[in-house]
Image 1 (cartoon, rainbow, N blue to C red):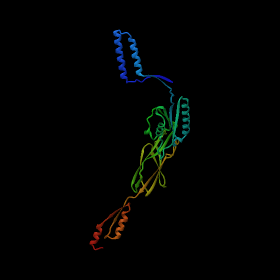
Image 2: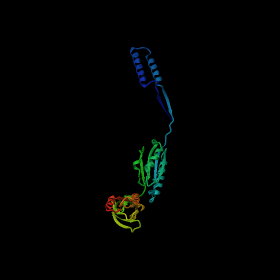
Image 3: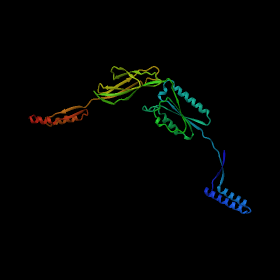
Image 4: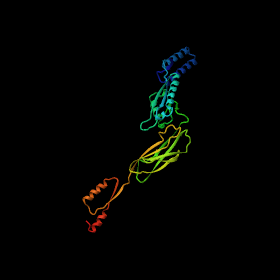
Length: 320
């Protein structure tokens, strides 16, 4: 319980200060002229001014609110590699124990998995959602348990407290992945198209400069090439047939990498034929010519060219 003396004047403060100044002047004049009872007049003025100031004794009973610690846990698929799942559970248990030792402190936990449609790890979105559910003034800190792969950093909320990141994994972890950076959805048969690939090593990689890249088209015999690591590869491709062509790219798993699931990629390219140019020649207009013209014009893969000059030339020779 706390007590305090508060003032709530019946008149505005400038008016009260003006009255006090006027009373002080009158009291000074009384003292100067030697009037009897001047101290009673001063005491009366003080009592009147105190009554106008309207003093009151305010007593309050206050209860302190607890601090809140936010914990966001990454449960995406990459957290299942190695012993990361066990590290996550151990980190959660450690945070819970530490918070339990603090007085008047609560812990809020939010777990999130992979975003739908290969959206990645949306750690900042989960943190923003958890923060919106709590009073910002009570948030004392926030923590994220993750492997470091976050795909929505630009959505990081403005935090009223420090943010700490607990990384899972080992210092010696590394991984190799095959990335298809550019692949067209379709290509014209007989024309060369360009695909852009890249093989990347992440983490404490052994430092290999070249690796084997295996390429297979549909069910044809795979071919293996030696390609550099960490550089964009422009591969010219000519589709062998119309319709859907399936191109498979893969690199062999290396010893010590976390997973070989991202060492392969499949690209589907639809092969289309170039438009066929057809010349329709007729000696004279007739119903059969109109039928052929309509049929040929209805096919989007054909470019129809009608030459009436041939018909006029044949008419001059008498060929009807």
